[in-house]
Image (cartoon, rainbow, N blue to C red; front, side, top):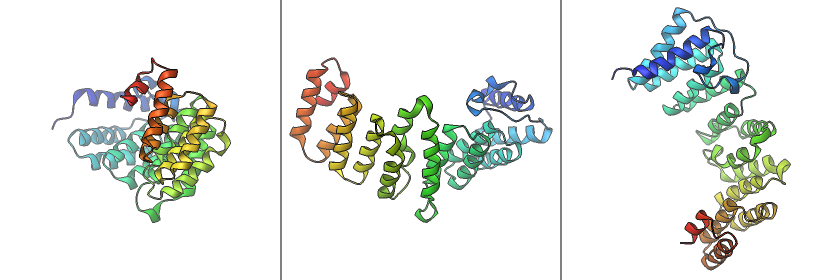
Length: 261
């Protein structure tokens, strides 16, 4: 299969942005998030490997493309390249390569929430004996501490980020510790509820959801999660009662009406 012209054009834009020392940052769309970008000399060798990586990907040789991008990330130390290397390695399902690329990404973009979140998620994948739970917790603690206006979203994403960790009891412990500084934020209790639900501790999950609803009365995601937990516990009549009460309170809510249907 021949490489797509549009894809190669985007790749060339990023390549020339590297050579311009970050001046042509609009080509990558990520420069603002990546912070200070290193000045790069666009040598013939770098351009050759860059295009070779894209052509390999376009031809379905994803493993080769991922390896070439990882080599480029190591040589250029550019966060845009490191991010691209991570994405392609994840797509190729090569977790070792993806972790290596993500580690470079976090090193060269230490203020990037996304880089740390991706690294934490990748650190939880693979064989149980290879998983460093302390490193995962450290990365996620930094993400939450530096969230600024994205704290609610980052709290809600904890479950997804930790989904690959096979030890769900360990995940629950990590979530409990990570959310301890944020117990006045409703999303922290949703994260706790989801972690409890994963180990089938429905009483604790319901208690966490109820605390979220105390902090934000009538919050639809919490209401729907509570109904789901009740249904899983076999308490169908109570789940229906909760739904009917919430629909009566907010009759215009489409999600609540759909859940009740």
